[in-house]
Image (cartoon, one colour):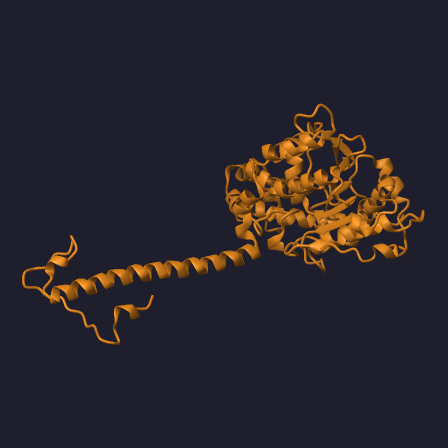
Length: 457
């Protein structure tokens, strides 16, 4: 069984504020479609034995709410299940459709097999559908402020924290140069948006913006700021990482454990996500974090070799693949990121991780989260949970109203009885704390329209 988590392909920028030449911000551009089609072609070749004669019941597809992830998985699926010719899209720039992969020769071979005209997916696979969760109910691929209030609170705090301000000081000259060129970029959140626009122009082969040539210092600094902010803000601290890792990690344990018991029919799982879907795992596996990313940038600017070659933001169409093996009776897993196998279980002696080790590490790397505890931390961000909470709140308020009304009723009833008893000449029936002045008399109108039992609660 293989589980493939990908970042969507090249897309238009998230907004057109800094560059109004885009028609469909956030949507996948043609280059992104070609990237994932190429990736699907590669997966078909690499896992041909596993995928041979695969049935729809053995495939699971899920993407986030975003159209770019859904389009990416669709293109990937086409690449896997379409018969290929040997015609190369030679007119296209390489960066337009090739996906990040460690073995460039393997990628070039795949590129030569991309069709100019695609044939139909085999009929028996045509009805495959992706599982799409609403944005605020996503619980597997992407954990964000939209579906986890705790994550949103922590991200808000990072807008003005010391680490953010330190990087802003590091890029002080770049901010000054951008403003001198007429680009209104004053802080890291704006640099993130501007760097995103620049990176999208590069992916689409658009000419560079005026005064910011590709691979020039201003371009590199700005794109670094965009990527750094994404890594730092979207990854968070170890506890946030555990929150973001837990849903998919827990599902992997379930899938692989059931597979080992012969209770899981799946062979292929394609999950369409974002860089934020990959950051937690890349950090968990000691591949990428904002610290090593910054050190690489400083070394690069000084003209020195980067000390952490693997510490990069996952580029568009990056893939994180878990391969599950059970043919020896001792199930184990391999983890491959962009074509390179990494050690990912802390206590394993080699690159492979036994299913037992993989399962036992789940609580260790997620602060002992359980499904109920995870929901307790994050569920306030779900639409369904919000609705449930509103119902619970209504019930709670109604119950509280009943309790307060009942207490009020009992208090008033006691006053009525005491007043009535005193009026009848039984002052000794008063409670311990009821004191009346000599000669003082309390009365209460006990008429048919104002009986104690008729008090509204």
